[in-house]
Amino acid sequence: MADYLILFGPPGVGKGTQAEHLKTTLGLAHVATGDLFRDHLKRETELGNLAKSYMDRGALVPDDVTIGMVRERMKDPDTQNGMLLDGFPRTVAQAEALEKLLAERDQTIKHVLFINAPKDMLLERLGNRWTCKKCGAIYNANTKPPKNAGVCDVCGGVVYQRDDDKPEVQAKRINVYLEQTAPLIEYYQARGMMTMIDGRQSMDQVYADLMAAIEQAK
Ligand code: ADP
Ligand code: ZN
Image 1: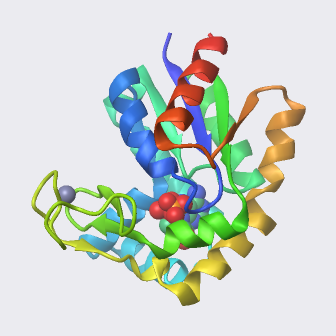
Image 2: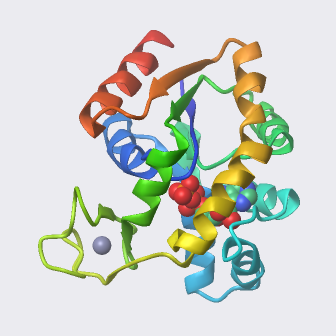
């Protein structure tokens, strides 16, 4: 059976790094709405230009736009073998829409993995986060810099600081998370389908906890 997993947590908690690792191990299609928006932006599509105005402010892109984009992505055949959802759902309305989209193919969410960390740690990590423009690889200026400054270890692309990782926007993104996304904690907890993972631990330990939670959910 195909597995549908949700990875969720505040901005800067390390979701993206863990998702890269997990999707390879689990062989699931990685559906990261932030990456999908950035890809549209790079190609200068209508959707990309619309999303940019929200992303630059640290706001969420409207639900109908985001859900429509995920619906399109779910037409790709690789998603039939399961998905690792990363950064989606981010609102209760998105969570409900996702359930409907999955029900259309007789599927349900297998488990929700919630990585959490305190606000000061999130701000520290976001402030030091640098991203490869080409492949999306994530670096940390303090703990995991690229071997050659400004150059991606993986693909040789340019490593840059995302506009929405700049200090002015960070606090806004965390507040948006607390207001609009944090209600999902209760939503999924009430349904008994979520494991909370301590994002203060090392990347390796967080990964081990994620794998253990996935095993248990089988
Ligand atoms: P992070 O990795 O820091 O959590 P993402 O790369 O997932 O950030 O998302 C970057 C931006 O893209 C968000 O701040 C938001 O503007 C937009 N975005 C991504 N996913 C969603 C979503 N599910 N709903 C609305 N907006 C989204
Ligand atoms: Zn790269």
